Image 1 (spheres, rainbow, N blue to C red):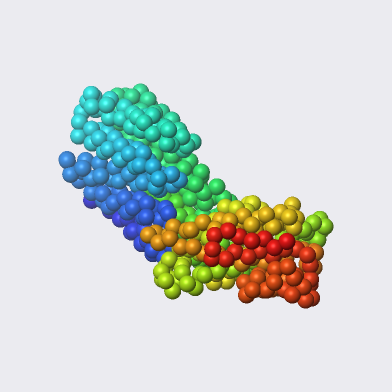
Image 2: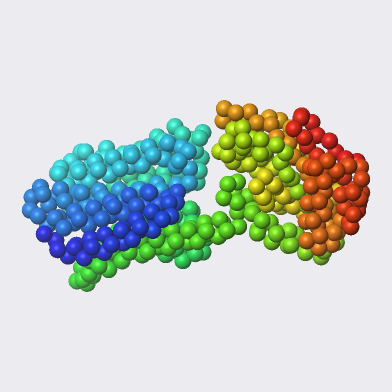
Length: 446
């Protein structure tokens, strides 16, 4: 028994348990793949306990150990591929490389070192990504796909060159496989987490150090065999990666909580808190540049009837659809927020004008003029829109909001559209108010 692997197994087991606990509370798009990868790393250390057994048992344990280590790296890499959920080709590459790894390591341990099977096994590492890339090139033409192809084709060439070298050919070949896998992890994580957070930096550096172990180790053994390096030193990069991944999950959780605090949970749009902050900033920019900012308050008509007729689930879907429709109509620099149950607010920043705001409002109403297909139900809703312009209708945020709300309220409850003063006794203006009823078409007050 190789008892020296027991502390590493215990450490990785504890880190895997901690990772699973954090991942369970923060289910991210990558956490499931990461957890599978760490279970494979734990299997690697478990198999290492038995690698000193004599004969086929020891060889089998070494085979499981190396395959589990390489498979963990391949799963880590696959989990960071951004298009893996949409395209099955990434899964085919993963399965193909797993099969190539199992085949090559099996031949290396159980066949003679001069076996002809090493050639097709080595070719398979480059052939699988090449075939999948060619077949799926119309659907996937991503830089990471080409990086993976170059890495594993280079691995195939290297294996064919060194694997039949006497004494250390297979040793170098197995280390080359592991280096390629974990260097690929480093590149994929570097692409997926292009941010300067502690978790990102530690994870990427950890994978780079992990890959370097499979280069530095053979180099030290070949040129400085008298220098003894404890096994725990070579395993330090694994712990760095584990800690980095846990930090990434925690950072994502903090960011998610921050997003929830500022966005509506149903539509994903800015909530009232973020809307007020953006409106205050927009008005400040408008003051400095002496430009306009338009505020549109949109209240849906007939939404209560939708809830009463079809149920709140359909009502939620209607709100989501309306949020998507409104967001698709405005510019990226503008803001669409959900500020109430069935109320949406739009901030139109410079360059804008009363005419442009009127045009946007009319187009929003036109979007709601068409029936909405929600599942098996066809829903028709309308809206009432109140518009206020800074600085024409109000010179501070509170007055501007009141102006837009009052115009929307009076229109919704039947105020005369041609009498702005009726809607705004204190801030009477000539800017129009728009109303959308339950019937097709919309009216614009002049």
